[in-house]
Image (cartoon, rainbow, N blue to C red; front, side):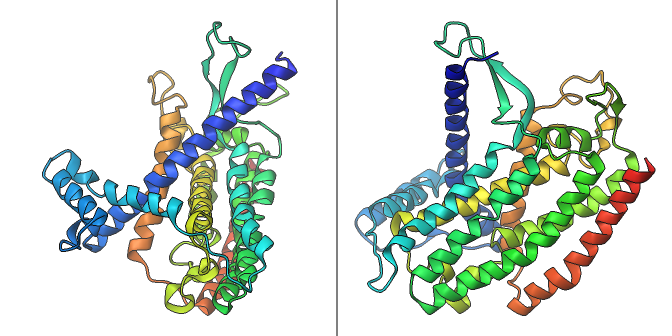
Length: 392
């Protein structure tokens, strides 16, 4: 048993590590987004333009070209431009419109960002202990460092409750700007998230019905098709036919995930062809960066939930097919942090792939897809999952 001091110190360490990983992935994702979209759409980047300019920007351009002459570094030659963008966000003037509600305008990005980070508190990245601190460490010596921050029995309920709060930051930011374009973007986002929250919840409830638990760790292990031991000592395993509602539920959930994160083709809250930049039109500097940070953190949360519930989580095969991997095979038959993060990064790539490929929906089409199609099919999928649970 850990003492209260040890519990607090361990919590601080795990929270620090988790936030550091998120803050590291976000800038990598912004760079990857430019590279992926550039390759798919065959677009010229900043390293191929502005050759006649002088000064600091010209130096960055020349450095990028120099990196392009080295085979290994050629893929990363956009990094100087990316670093300059980060520096620009830090140094750019922080402007608050004269007629804006200053207090609400300032706290809106924070309201949007905090729920995005708080969601990761119950996400299980690995169902066991990653390592044990050496005894030489003060306070935490000999204590295990687990692959999850907390293991509560209502983890999914917590995710859905906390994740739905982020829309308030978008709505408040749009309203506090006292401008018609941000206001319309905020209202669009509110209607969009309310509409798609229903089919998203129904798609996740299919996984809950099949597993009989709301605990993220137990859900991910059971839905991978691995035999698990209940509290009563019984060995249970997901029936193979349950892969059918899991398979369709994954695509329903991922579609709703695009809408929940305001990503293409559902980025109606910040449609530049209609609303300039949408709800964050009036934001500059680090306040704008916080909105972007929340968006990428939400993308990671959506990808982590999809990986944990539908794609086998910490195991190799998705949709409960891990049962076909013999137990004697090392690494492939065991849970691994690499499997989980590999699936998360693949889904993040899908976010970028879709943005570079699909056009934006009209707003009436967005509502029609959510209410007329996704809600009925997710209800049917939930009924199929309940029938399988009842039969087996």
